[in-house]
Amino acid sequence: MNFPILSAVTFLPLIGSIFILLIKDSSDKSINNAKYVAIFTSFVNFLLSIFLWFSFDTSTADFQFIENKQWVRGYFNFKFGVDGISILFILLTTFITPLCILSVINSVKERIKEFLIALLVMETLMIGVFCSLDLVIFYLFFEGGLIPMFLIIGIWGGPRRVYSAFKFFLFTLLGSVLLLIAVISIYWITGTTDMTQLLLWNKIPKEYQYLLWLAFFSSFAVKLPMWPVHTWLPDAHVEAPTAGSVILAAILLKMAGYGFIRFSIGLFPVASDFFTPLIFLLSIIAIVYTSLVALMQEDMKKLIAYSSVAHMGFVTVGIFTLTKQGLEGSIIQMISHGLISAALFLCVGVVYDRVHSRLISSYGGLVHITPKYAVIFMIFTLAALGLPGTSGFVGEILILIGAFQKNILVAVLASLGVIFAAAYMLWLYKRVIFGKINNNELKKIYDLNKTEIFILSSLAFLTLFFGFYPEPLLRTVDISVSELIRNYEMDLTFYLKEAAK
Image 1 (cartoon, rainbow, N blue to C red):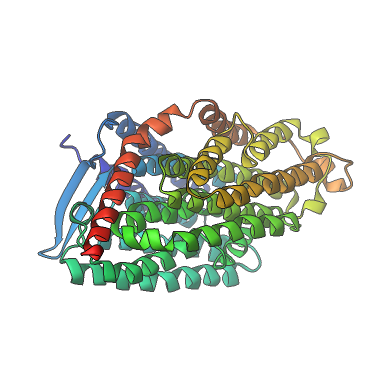
Image 2 (cartoon, helix red, strand yellow):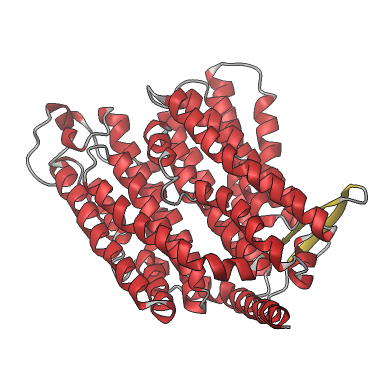
């Protein structure tokens, strides 16, 4: 295929944001035009990514649709490509973004043009992360996403938005400085930042791997986030507008998970093997501790934010089992969590727009007033606790199977997360949906409108579809995951033989 489809998918939202920027007028007509441009751009981009998926050859582990252009002559190339792992995250990004834009239309009242521009720029930067096959390009896209998210939280957030925005920015920036040093070091050691060459040759000496792995880990651990550097996430979620929380939970966290799979395991096999016990320890603490903290929350957004940290603990356990089931499970868990957490934050946004409160105590008895909302919320509550028949179950069961192969104790402790998830999610649902109506303001609210039904039904359909039939996801990642594990084992064996000489 000669058509640069990856560049098209990546930069189309940016072109859409430029069109919105050119709309100078602030009249209602101009604002409506900006909304139409944003919806049209994001929807077309989703269709392009669907075409990309159908054109993708699942029988090979090679990178496909490669685009390679000289950027800084003799040093760095602008190189794009996708494999079975990255294409799913591109699909997730292009699917979630138009739903976010639709949710914004009625909820954001001020500076809506600027908000839409920030969302579209954000989409470009996130897709760029999953397409990049050069470390420098990856770094630019990976860190570039900080800026629009910082603005989304800091301008359109809640009362403590400035504090939360700066906390988010400083936490992630601190890790990123070390990532930049690591990228420079890799170029200095190997003479290239081309991922295909680095993965093929794997010529990073063993003595450098440990420090480089820790540098990459510092950035990914903050972004994921892992315990104990997770504290920025609940604050960011609570203060961010609904669309910001959706993007943050559904896609931004997955960039770090993708980074662990692509870079930590791919480039530093010896260090990955050495630090696996550390990852397991931090993941188990994250699963157990943040689940218990979630049980104590009075704010709906904070509860869902802590549950995200626990679910990401499952993901890191799955990745570092380095088994086929564990890795495939972690990828499906990330896709699944992207759908479910997006839906849960949208559900909170629906009632917040009507009542202007996120406190659980402000609700109760919604089943009597908003039955459609109660049904939709129930689907995602059950999906979040990993009920069989939902996509959440598929990811978690595969991760636990992989963990049992690697370490039985880790698997047993991780499975506690399933029990805790049931506790805090069902507790949340009971207090919000059932019981008596104690708040008189609730009697005035109305059920889901057509736009909200469309958004939440789309997410519910995919959550249930992949719960019953995960084959399309598994088929897409299968060969790429097998190749990743094979290369990891070969590289590890090579380094061990070298050490034995």
